[in-house]
View 1: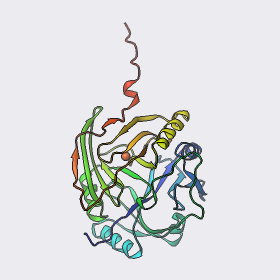
View 2: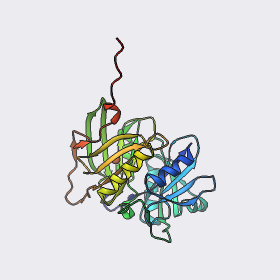
View 3: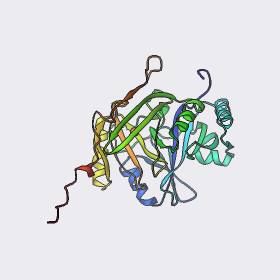
View 4: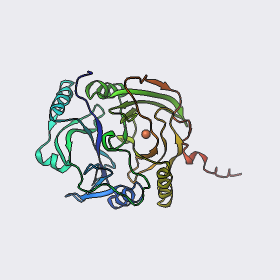
Length: 303
Ligand code: FE2
């Protein structure tokens, strides 16, 4: 599909959350995102770069991702990619003008991926009138044409999801990680849509639709500063600072108020399709990314 239009970036994420106030404090005070708008249902939209909307946080009981928005180049690309989704046997619904306006995009279509995750394809994101700025950041987010970061989706039938993202949406394979990690079998496949090492990774089934989403900043200090903010806010740290062997990301993981995780990182490598050779890595981290709970003091044995 070398000449076929494909997904070009991770455009936006929606979350349905039970603790809306806690999410606003977390998103602005820990992640350093800005509230871009209040939404009609009581939620809020967030931004991180020149895009007017990058996240939609809305009240509900799901405590999970409610939509993944994938960007394509233009109206023609939207139709061609949507046609491929339909031809692969998935129901595709054209979004109304109101739905597109609510996402601040020109046009969108809706479908569910093989794992049932509500997803949208869109083109023409609205740009914010003011440049993004957060007093909490010394650098800024690595976003714009690389998309908002990456998302790790879970799937009961991993191979079906892999085939869909690769052959239908047009993602290109970056690599795999297959290993044991603290008693768990890890089998992840990573795919890129632009120069960012991966915009999506696909793993096996979990309780939530996503394992984590990742935001990247332009300096190592901003990772450390976010780690400090997470500690001060009593955000549960799920994986300590570490570095992945495949995307080379220096990052830590912690829990969102909805239970799924976020990764906050710096230094992710770029992929050049002209020379990139996909490989399989036998470990998930070069160092670090340890679950602190594994090192908690053991309870004293009762005698
Ligand atoms: Fe990640």
